Amino acid sequence: DFDTGDRPNEEFNLELDEDHVRRWQHLVPLSEPRPKQSSTCSDMSWWLVVYKWVAVRSAPSLEGNILAGLIRGEPVFCVAVEGPWMQISLSKIPPEPAGGDAKKTARRRRLSSVGELAWLMWDGQQKGLPVLLQPMSHLDRLLAYRHCDLKLPREAVAWTVSEVDVFLGSLGFIKPGRESAMMRSTKRLVRAVRGGYQPLEFRVDSTGKEKGVFSTKTVSKGDLVEVCPLHEVEAHLRAISERSEE
Image (cartoon, rainbow, N blue to C red; front, side, top):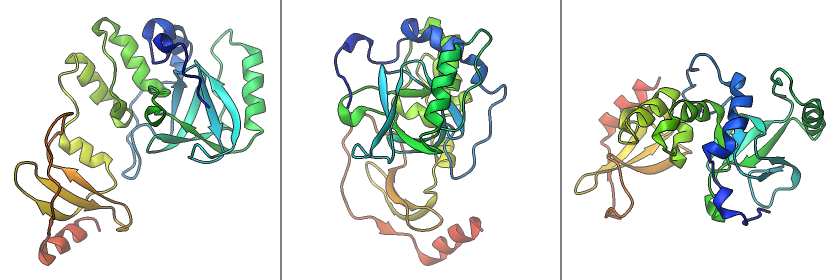
């Protein structure tokens, strides 16, 4: 469902996409919204298609029915991010800038007739493709730091605008710390730990249904990691953790 030709212009390119970013800059909020505990910093915000064509699907799967397609430079409103997929609101139509294209506005209104919600793949990694959409607020910062000639990593979609500013302002040397990453995660209750060369934690969310193993420090490509049993957190410590969430 993705054309893999035209490789040089596939990924976000500021020279290629600058006009699109500037056209939709009015969609960037004037102040940085404070994300809810159970959401990422890019939920409930405008994103921009930065790939030549992306399928709008009925479900977060490549098997989902294709309802429509969006082309490079089109904005969409993100409701939620789930892995490489994002749920979008088809009924939320972006306000056109002064002198906007009436034909494109009419097209978006026709798209809204498909339904209320749909899904897009924002990260094309599993198809060997680059990032397909990026938050408008992040693209706005890339435009402000255009002299740095930097690209944001895939995980930056979960960063706050302030964290993007620090990353770009430090020429890519400073990424968000563990504390802010923990605040963005829904899996905040530690249930087991493992020390040693690469300390690990097993964490769950407040329901106990979402779970995962996390490193207590940054793991870079090529680093050695251990696969080993974890030690369960003692009952009285677990109780403290549970009370802190009440």
